[in-house]
Image 1 (cartoon, one colour):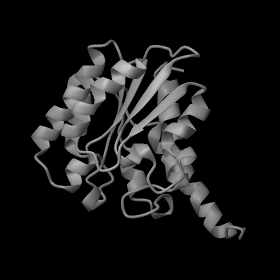
Image 2 (cartoon, one colour):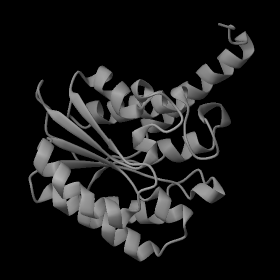
Image 3 (cartoon, one colour):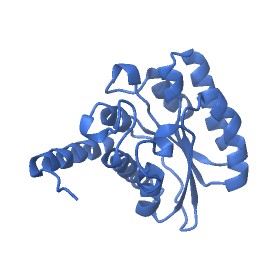
Amino acid sequence: MQEMNPVKNKIHTMALLLILLISGCDSPAPALSPLSGDAIILAFGDSLTHGSGVQREHSYPAVLESLTGRSVINAGLPGELSRQGMARLPGLLEDYRPDLLILCHGGNDILRKLNRTVTLDNLKAMVMQAQQRGIEVVLVGVPELKLFSSKPAPLYDRLAGDLGLAYLRDTLPVLERTTSMKSDHVHLNEEGYNALAHALFDLLKDHGAL
C-alpha cells in the first residue's frame, strides 16, 4: 500500500482536530439520560447515516458503536426523503426499542428543493414518534448542501429550539465544506465519518449520556 504524503496527512489531522474543536461548541443543549451498558442507539437517516462512500465498518454508526461500547443500529437509507423516513421510522422504533435516537435526515429534501415547511413538519413528526415512546433524540444539523454552507439549514435550528433537543449543530456543515473529509460532492470519506462519530461521542459525554 502506498504511504500517505506526510504533508497531506498533517493537513488531514489538523482538519480533524478543528472539526472536533468546533463540535464542542455546537449547543448548550439539555441533559440526556445516562445510557446503560446494554443500551441501544438507533442512528436514523439517509446516505450520510448509511455511510455511502466507504465500507460499512467505516460509517459513523459503526465508529460510534466502537467508541461508546453500546449497540448502534445503522438505519440509514440512501436517497430517502423525509416523508419516507417519517413512514419508516415507527417500525424501527417498535422493532429495536432504542434508548436513544440520532436523527440525521432531510438532506435529500434540501437537494431536491422541496418545501422546507413540509420537511420541518416531517422531521418534527419523527422526533415526536420517538418522544412519545420515551426515547430521547439527538438532532444532527444538515447544511444547505448545494451551497456548501458552513451552517445548518435554518429549519434544524428551529426544530432543535422548538423541541429542546440535544443538537449537533455545526459539525456536519463544516465537514461538508472540508474537501479532505469528502469522498464525493455530498458524502464523507473515512476521516469524515470518523470525525462525525467522534463529535457525537463528545456530545453524548457532554450531555450526560455516557
